Length: 248
Image 1: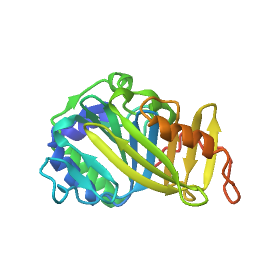
Image 2 (image 1 turned 120 degrees about the horizontal axis):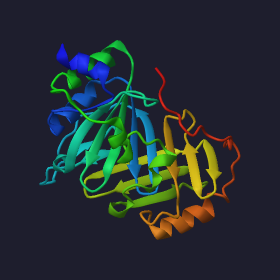
Image 3 (image 1 turned 60 degrees about the horizontal axis):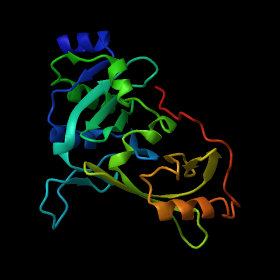
Image 4 (image 1 turned 120 degrees about the vertical axis):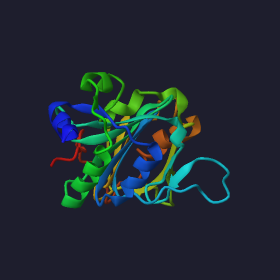
């Protein structure tokens, strides 16, 4: 097929598929790595997608997936791209108005997941784009790389919760995209002002810079004061990998 031949010869393509159709198809993946890039925070999750629906009692076009915690306004999606070049593992990148390429989806490599990817790519009309052009706009950025892009449109909260600390609650909010997440800390590391947090399986990883203006100022002060003072008994402080990217 022409689409497969063009995919083999280029590194990035714009999908000609409706945003709601794309979001609906994600539930068929059995294994994905999700990256959300917000102002001063990057969230990585190994997860599965659920069904995007309009939340009850809301008269809006917001779509919410309770499994991943994502709330998306499809009308803010500018384009959906597929990247498969250079050192970047194959992924889908979603660009939103005002916040750029804020969501990346790295599919698994099982046979079912490969079929799902093929279905998503089949409507593509072969509109290739230079990979370098997408990279310059933030597509393909990994965890530390995404901390300082498009921060003016984000209002983020980061809180330590629980009597012993050790749990982190995230609320990432922009006009186009929101995500809520809670994790139990297992590994903690920092490099200068950047903190790297992980749960025990590294299935949820957060990189953040509390100094970033998109992070609630009161949260940033409490976080910067309380995290270093936690009793880290049972927590690993071994440095987390800078790029825990999926390898196939």
